[in-house]
Amino acid sequence: MQIKETTNDGLKRAYAITIPADEIEGRVTKEIKKIAPQVRMPGFRPGKVPANLVRKMHGEQIHAQAVNDVIRESVDKTIADNELRPAMQPKVEMGDGYEEGKDATLTMELEVLPQVEAPDTDGLKIERLTVPVDEAQVDETLERIAGQNKSYKDAAKTRKAKDGDQLIIDFVGRVDGEEFEGGKAEGAPLVLGSGQFIPGFEEQLTGVKTGEEKTITVTFPENYQAAHLAGKDAEFDVTVQQVKVEDETKVDDEFAKNMGLENLDKLKELIRGQLEQETAGLTRTQMKRALLDQLAAGHDFAVPQGMVDAEFDQIWAQLQQEAARSDDADAMLKEMEDEKDDYRRIAERRVRLGLLLSEIGQKNNVQVTSQEMSMLIQQAAQQYRDEDRQKFIQYIQQEPMAAAQLRAPLYEDKVVDFLFDKAEITDREVTREELEAAIEADEDAEQKPAEKKKAAPKKKAPAKKAAAKSDDADGDAAEKKPAAKKAPAKKAADEDDKKPAAKKAPAKKPAAKKADADDKAPAKKPAAKKAPAKKKAAPKKSDG
Figure (tube, rainbow, N blue to C red):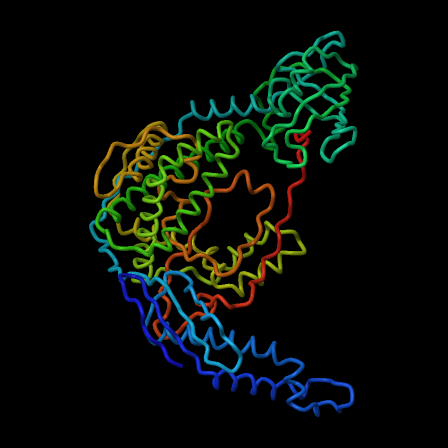
């Protein structure tokens, strides 16, 4: 085997690899001898089939596997011999015109991780903004809960329904005269003016009375989630079982019991704990951003552009999903295009911070234990159907890249907690509004180029906040290696409420003398198996 370096430019490396024909043929011959005793062929006793016939029957398949194996081993050897630390999976291509019996020529291109000195963690200073929870906040939250859990009582049969009234209805929907899935329900509650059903549905029920039957016609939105109904005209036969009016909601022990608590004091205690937990999460986000800002300010080294591209693609994909669900998709997409450079800078910052956090974690022996990893796998497996959970667990156990992506958020949090323990922390009491404003200010600051402090961009639509916000507790500070295998399919319900695309795997230093076959698999590697599909969510009644 001959290996020749053809590119050494910054973090980019390229190699030309030649694999002798006799090495490939030797592997083929060895494999034929190995399987010959198991081959069965009419006219021959078991184990007595001649090697030339075995070659004729299975030679093409055996040769393809031999080439595949030798390519992978040559890539691993190149990485190990040159003590490379690949940032991502190398790109491997076989030369044109390869034929059996000839030398195989390969090209391998990759980017390597930069040599990053773990920053000094002494002298870190962080201000912790805290928000005390008072009784006024508890009472306000309690009133909001009561407003969201309104009770209704039967109205007089002569009452004409209006906005705010609740209808109990049966309905059957048809498109082109045919009933469709999700278009039928009995005893469905609907509050007029809530926007729960598709546009036009509720408006046409204004003025109905108890016992009334009515046929209404609506048009499904063009961006309706069920593609086969999008833009279609539909007709619904509606029977109004009952018109109800809002009843007084008393916030007392009985109300608490209806919420599943012993009494009102227990409900207030639960609310107080949730508010404290919520503000603690915001405080951690603010602290983490302050910490990462300090790390980023002192480091400006080159990062692998392939990793930046992958991170940017994740951000961009999430922004596009958010835009597609908005009422003003075209305007949001245009705004995104205008600020594409800002998002790329965000991606680069995240990759750089990921490398820094990884170096800090490795230098200080921060680890995710096997017990913690097992718990992560079990928690993630709950998203799948019962029959697919074991398949998912096996998938994670067999795929190092998938396991790394699952482990990444916890690893990042543990490195951040380590740094918090090292830092000098001072507390300052603020209002929730001040805390949220501080977090938002950090979001804008992240978008400024490091080399010039331009004015913060004007306030953006919610999509940007969701996908490109600074590296918060659920964010993407640790950079990722894109998975060599396809990630598990998402369940339908996940599409609407998932966090910004991709938790990232902290940068693990590949061992200098040991190549990871899954990380370095060449382009010729057989197609990766998929993880089991997640369970789908049942259609909502409001889909009618």
